[in-house]
Image (tube, rainbow over all chains, first blue to last red; front, side, top):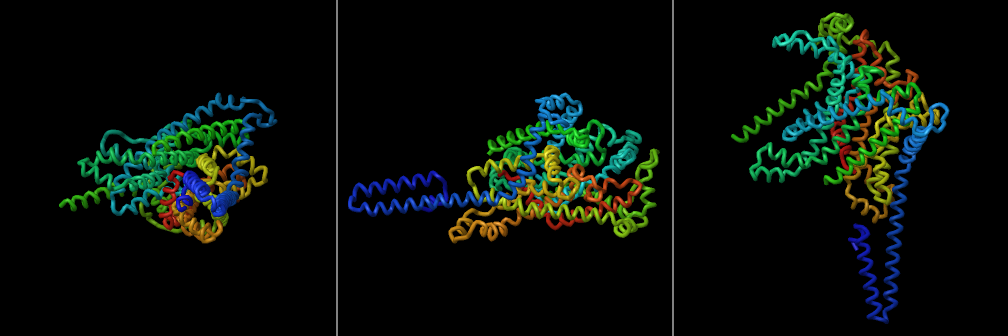
Amino acid sequence: MKQWKTSGKRFRFIWQNKNVRRISYIKESQGDSLMKSGNMKGRLDLKIQKFRWKKNRLRRAFFLFLAPSFIGVLVFVLVPFLDVFKRSFTTAVTGQFNGIQNYKTIFTNQAFQLAVKNTFRFTFVCIPILVVVGLIIAFPLSKLKSAGLIKSLYLFPLAMPTATIVIVWKMFFYKQGFLNLFLTRLGEWSGLWGEIHKDYLGSSAAFWVLVFSYVWKNTGYTIVLWLAGILGISGEMLEAARVDGASELQSFFRVVLPNLKGSLYTIVILSFLNSFKIYREAYLVAGSYPEQDIYLLQHLFNNWFVNLDFDKMAAAAVCVGGFLFVVIMILQRLWDKSE
Amino acid sequence: MKKKIKGIKQEITTVLLLLPAVLVCLPVLLLITGSVMGNGELRECLSPIFAEDLAFVTWKLVPDYPTFENYGKLLFLTPQFFVLFWNSIKIVGCILVGQLLAGVPAAWAFAVYKVKGSRALFALYVVLMLLPFQVTMLSSYLVLNRLGMLDTHQALILPAVFSTFPVFLVYGGFRGIPMQLFEAARIDGAGEFTIFRKIGLPLGKSGLLSAMVLGFLEYWNMMEQPMAFLEEKALWPLSLYLPEITWAQAGYAFGASIITLIPAVFVFVWGQDYLEQGIIFSGLKE
């Protein structure tokens, strides 16, 4: 009885069958107690009915609780996105159907190609850096007894609004800024090079400024996720490795790392999500049309938006959205498999 | 002896980790000193930016003549600043309240009622959460335009209210409650809403607060949305106004940065446990 309540269909089925069998057994052996067995069947029906009613109740509750949010999502995201999908096959001004012309336009558009290339480059450069930096800090941190303050310091950039940090980055990476000052002093001190006046923001180095800024901002986030993963590894497993004579390096590579696969997927997905927000820094440092190495998809979307190129924007939104959807699905599959 | 070695090892690790951590927070220090420097002194330090010569920017950890003139100017002579500050507070406050009203019940629905179709809907929510703003920008614009909400604060508030990220975070909090509790309450005759209010909300509080803390930091820093949907500068949030201040008014910019930073730091310090919790929830698999 108890089992039936807590678990799913299979148990219910077994339970039912057992009873039906019992009922038929009663019917066969004790012909005179047919009344009794009929009674029992009635009770059984009642139970099933009650179960159905409860299931309906849960269904109703689910939809009632979900309704406010789901209606909002429908109105503000899903339905308009269908509209965008429709628009991606029409011209911007007259709204006439023109097939896949918009898609052809964006894929032959140089700005789009450049933006896609840069966005990919940015993602593939900064996510591995972030993941590794986070782990390098998180692992020793997990062994400290009092890690609170250090963790807070690393997390702090998360709280700093982009607008406030950009003024500092400008002072750092400006031609006459702190970084060049530091490098020049280093050169004078070691006698290896002279004064350096590189303009980091106006050259291809701007890309690396963005990578730096991204890692600076998100390291804390990653550390917390890694720490959660590391602390989730059972101490017994590590103890067993130590007893078997594994060195610390060995136990790190053979025990800790393989157990962090789940965390890795999470971190990659969330870092990816956050990587799109780098647009804020890029825009504030260099405006709508920055140096070509940091012209990202986000810039392109924004410029299309400002110029009312809705046809291109719709096609690009469908492409990027579809691409992300596929990537997320693949990552989730991998994730499922890893467990 | 072994214990002693272990202690020393701990100390070395602490120092090695603490040094970069302090460097990470250096920019704040820079902002603070900048905000209490007088205009003359700032001009002297930053003069290489104006003049095209080869001298470097200089800085002092403690200004020669510390002054609060920047803050005074901001707080007493620029009423505009208050308008923007208030805009930010209003937008973020409305978004968070709205997210609570819409997102928390939705998270509850996903966490407690495993009915047919709930998994598929949840997957949809996860995908929506991961779509960047640029992908949904045009669709948001179309609907806001249709509803006549462009150039109003609703244009920022409503789409954010129905963001699915907080649903995911709050869901993480609700999932930690043992199911048997709800079952017991049902047997005792409690309605579903009573269970939500009396058991769900108190026990799922950590998820709720995490969503609020992460939400505050995110929307206090909101830029893409106001840039796209607000033309009227009087409606702008602080985060968008700050970059408009030029180098010529550097002291003013530093002061304004610090004031913008204060609420965020306050939320950060107060809610750090929830922030960490929220990050962990954001990483939970459904």
